[in-house]
Length: 257
Image 1 (cartoon, rainbow, N blue to C red):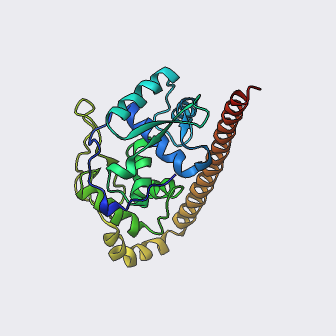
Image 2 (image 1 turned 30 degrees about the vertical axis):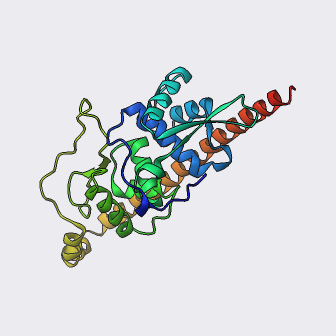
Image 3 (image 1 turned 90 degrees about the vertical axis):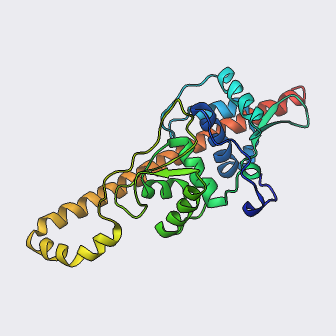
């Protein structure tokens, strides 16, 4: 369910700090709105299941429905979540208002959602994960979106975005979490790598077995990523099936069956 509002029209009126459970619940609402729109808005049970799923979550948690209800109530008080009722009036469902209270475009919304759900990660990982929800055609586009989010204070990084191994994270931590990324000493950027490429080609010609090892490692990482993606898709299908079962149960109750 999308909102007819463009990012440039949205003032940043949403909260700038969120607790870990609040981030998890809000991230679940945004993720499911994009990836499973037929089951959105979500029931309390679906929110709880989404929070506790083991795929695309860090850390894995075990919230109860009572806890999720509390976190939803907190987010409602902050103006980023609303409770709505179905036509039968028997089942409460919940939706987010992130598009209305933050100036995120669709790519930035996906980026923020992944950071809320998983915390700090490298740009390559972030692009793959956020790509489930929005188009991110290149690392250059990702860096442009991250730069915009950093300038607005929504994202932090521990070094230049073109540096190898840089970590990025959201900046919604409350003071008691103290999760500010520390700037690391200067290291080579992707431009440095390009400048050194000729020298590295000479070195690699002297040690061809290292190229073979690197190729095998890259292939292994690709296969591992494919396996992880497939496992995540299976888990999401299971989540959809559980949501459909909830909807069927609601329909039966509304019909008196």
